[in-house]
Length: 371
Ligand SMILES: *Cc1c(COP(=O)(O)O)cnc(C)c1O
Image (tube, rainbow, N blue to C red):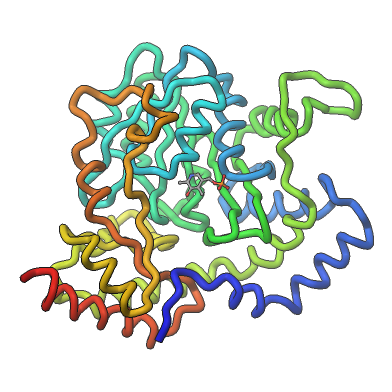
């Protein structure tokens, strides 16, 4: 058996009869930029996120960048985020001209540690970007309370968590702005790049519409510093079809996670920890073991594709060498980087495939790695 990390071709093939007519329709209308499908997708995606507004943008990085711009965050301002996120979160802060400040994460759920964030706050801090890492919501109540006390904005990086809930509420609707990526491999993925920002704040939504489209409220009048950062109509048409499937796909991901948990229960692997108030959407299924590299090599030998999200903490990458870390450093994130392993996870994964991965893992954890 050969187990891929994800199987996008399978997903697209299953939907081809719905997606091709949607694409054809856009082609016939030739309304490729800000066409009707964009607005329709925005309204459906906003509703899906329990939010009043969604603004489609070019990708998830841009969603974060423009969100910070809409909040007028820029040079001289600090933005606190997690040390173990995808580089895009930190790039977006740099794109806005602000300074990323890296805080450590909770050793159980790998999301921002509230005390670490509190320790990182200075008079220059303007916002916190909690990352709903791997599909599990960060501790939003604690972080929002902290933010309120210090007059900070909360911008959610929900790029890995479409449909995840926290105390029954959808991620994206929990902070001032919620940012999503529709990169093909995400839980909701386009046929290319795409992104969106959701919010309940009408003024911020309007600001984002200006930021993504040359500052034009009406054509040929440029009212603000702005960018070209729009969601393509073709991508919106694809996303409309896929959005209807997303709840069932997330359900399947949870089922696969349950199977993994069952098959791997008696190993010394640390399995994902889901907090009571969170519903996880398993963008990634990440386990932990001190001999991660040996484990990964073994799985590769058995034709199981794995990943590491992420092997190097943010502040160790060249563009982010200037970021500020708190004096205590980020010991949890640094240790995680050497121990985490992402197993194959996609809605189309069969029970046999999960079993195969678990068996391959079992051989190694008990016979090789622990010797
Ligand atoms: C994918 C991702 C992004 C960036 O999204 P793009 O659409 O690739 O720009 C940002 N943050 C996190 C946590 C992500 O996983």
